[in-house]
Length: 274
Length: 274
Image (cartoon, rainbow over all chains, first blue to last red):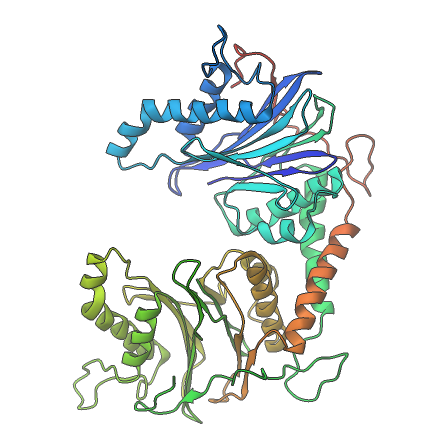
């Protein structure tokens, strides 16, 4: 399994990926899932990948040289695309090329053609953009309303992203949010594991040096891991327990619903409750 | 979809279920998923169900009268079982009876025989027990190490349960924890919905009056919903953002891993990074 998250904010982009892969529970390995494509001052792109590792590694390899016929000699590539939309079309074409090569054999072996990618960045002359690419090579783009994408084991870590992120969130705060989201995922799913790759891109910079690999010794991630769990429990304890009798505005009662009855009890075999 | 959680503590049992069912996104209904079986002073059992609604409704109906041949005239039923293990065997037999009746036709229609149930309670002469019953009628029991079960959309709400619950947790605190877990699930998955059924059972009581149906007007759940989200954001804001330069013990730096290099950048088509 895998957990990757990509976030598009007004101030920039944040990417975070884990590095665990597994083929069953008894074949766990470390493979990093972030690729960075940079022409300083011209274009900056990041890909995070989830799914079958043989597919995503092939997609990476193909992507570097994939071209879509556009009537020119060199064709449309991620290196000359003038928009992130076009660059993402090239990624889609790379996925389809791998499907052409491997899809039938995988199907014969009973293996799904399973791959998904987060692909985002900025090309000079355009705003930053963030895409989610599916295994058919089709894709969707993040908007102001939905400013992040997740691939892999996304559910454990989604609530904190839902609660915190808006396009106005500051970059470092969003990086923190992604790390908290990752921490919850690591705690609940063994198939997601350290080290983590974190990248922060600032709008209009067309390069980034804020790239870190975080393992179990990283002081910041250790702080997040211990502090978040502890404060979460403190907050939890600070909220009143339910009260079944009495109660006032400050300590609300667990009163029953005005519309629905509490569940009735069945007390013998023949009793019907509908 | 559905979200149900059952918790076994030293002090008692907690059960919480939502009430949304859906057949596709355009056929959403309210069906409650908690059944309570009570013979005051003798036995108290609760079932929460997830999966195909036609299956779980049939299982409910069959369970009330299901019997396993034990050489006696009346057979082994949930009403005369002397252990929760035996009562759960009866539930497993009810699931298998529904499978015999409907399994082949469902398979012909391309529908999985999809059902899972949390079943727990106490029978006089025995400690409280909590089981998770699968669609094949087999089951597992909660232990001190794993004191809760979830069925349905379990992932969004699992991190808070993992962080808070131990067998020593107080009953009302566990009820609060289940409601926080439900709140996170409701926020992230449209196919889980109000009203909620909550039941708290105190050890050795063989009955319960702490049964509530919580809809959107319930003051306690409203308090949980607004307070938890707000305090979570406050805690989140109270944690330092990552710092990419400087840093000290109190404000740890986002230093790189000692073992792993940060991801390198690809700057031209022919570059190889392994």
